[in-house]
Image (cartoon, rainbow, N blue to C red):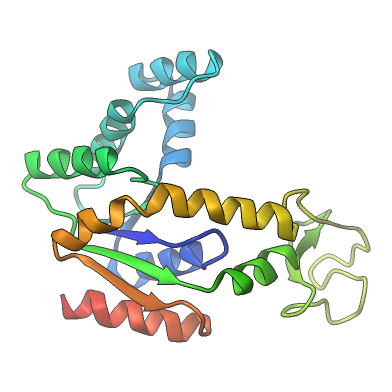
Length: 216
């Protein structure tokens, strides 16, 4: 079973992917993590990618597809994979399908987490973390038990990402729409795209996803 989780920044894809990994024995494949691992390993793919990135260029689709292919081969004992951050264009989706077909595999589910932009802005712009241990907090949803003191390490120093502000978040959401919108018809035509309401709690959202995956 292979699937893709789609959703804007802050939709909860990472949390849901972790739960799917645990519940169904899947392997999560993040393009960023794969690139870093290949570079660190010194593999031929990693060396090629490093040269491209050092030149300030984007790693081409065929190289990403090769890395995904390698990871699928290395995790052949897993029950499937979850792709994170790929594909983002129709050309990438087509190349991914071709690679899977060569392995007699398919993309079984493409699940879109639907969350309103106002909610995303609230979720992301309210985030902050402990500067010492990295524990995450939120202005509205998850404040420390003692104001100004980290629950985990007792530090009184906190930090926020510079781009976790409403203006930057809306810009990132616009970029997501532009990137993702073209691939939705591709997967709709294949009959594998399904949407879930991402506005509920983590368990509620996971129950929706689990129902789709288990029913397939």
